[in-house]
Image (tube, rainbow, N blue to C red; front, side, top):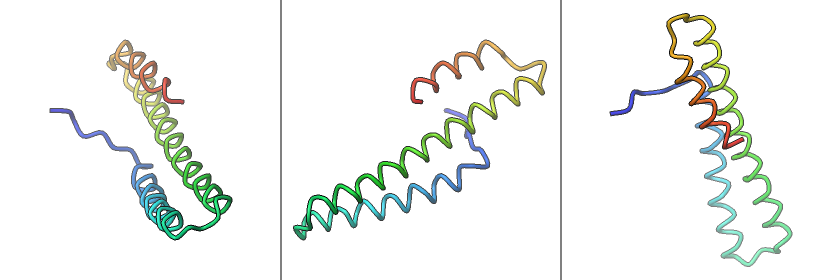
Length: 92
């Protein structure tokens, strides 16, 4: 079983993603209602930006947390931290 991994930024990220989810549902309705493609594209762009910002916030917060943990905890497994950095940096 994986240990629960949370940061202070997670509730804000969840809220941002929930708003994006609602927005995406309204875009589906726009498509089904035959709204102009330019309007749909604008709304999709807004959702894309919101999701990208959520991803960046999550990654940067995780990197900060790992750095702080490594610097403030001399017993921390620095090899594991480096592997986590490598793994998450692929998503930047």
